[in-house]
Amino acid sequence: MAQFALLLYDDPSSWTKLSPEEMQKALEKYTAWGTRAFVKAKQRLAEDPGKVLRAAGGKPRAADGPYSETKEILGGFYVIEAADYDEAVARSLDHPHLEHGTIEIRKFFGE
Image (cartoon, rainbow, N blue to C red):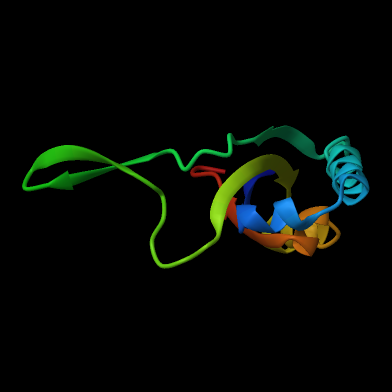
């Protein structure tokens, strides 16, 4: 089986609008989804914006990021196993993150 990354993007300010009860229910859904047999790894990222490295004039430079023209940022990821993109999509259609943001599915190189 090939491995795929599910990259979870959302607007972090949307989470602050949830009540404590709504937040608890959301966390329970994420936890339950992450226990499926085809899930090989998962990790939530820190809420800070991180850093972006880019070469400018042939020299690397670090900047606050990863913001461009979007409010959505990468907030976490899962690694899943699937035979192909169709199966990876099918396995992800009921992921609870779709209630809060976007999921990008990427196949690992060489898989």
